[in-house]
Image (cartoon, rainbow, N blue to C red):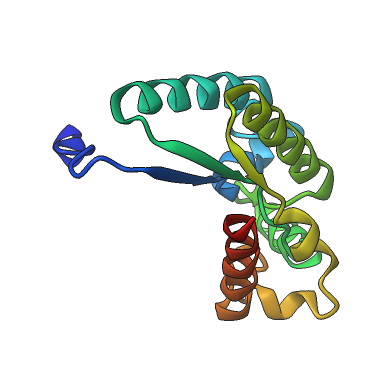
Length: 158
């Protein structure tokens, strides 16, 4: 599917936004829920390399967003059900893992001269947190996307 990258830089981007996906940071039952799919050190190295290559080809500036939170009680219950049924399972949004990836994202932002927007804290600390997510506890709902958009707009207004 390399053709999907044809003309990637036409028109040339001026600003790129990167938000870590939960699929990269999820833990799997195959690792005993101890290792993320993308190892943290690989995430950091590859993100720095990616930003460098895109900057070189496009001159674009970058804004990195921390990962969002999740409703961990829901994601943990879903993983536990899958394991109990004898199926492989994915565990999304474990708080310590999300905090680790947020810290790495902030380090990359500093190292690459990119902007950084913390969306982990507002999605984690929101008073009615489940309303920010769909029923799976991972994907943002309309309200969650509004919260994320507001954080971005505040960052861009600075």
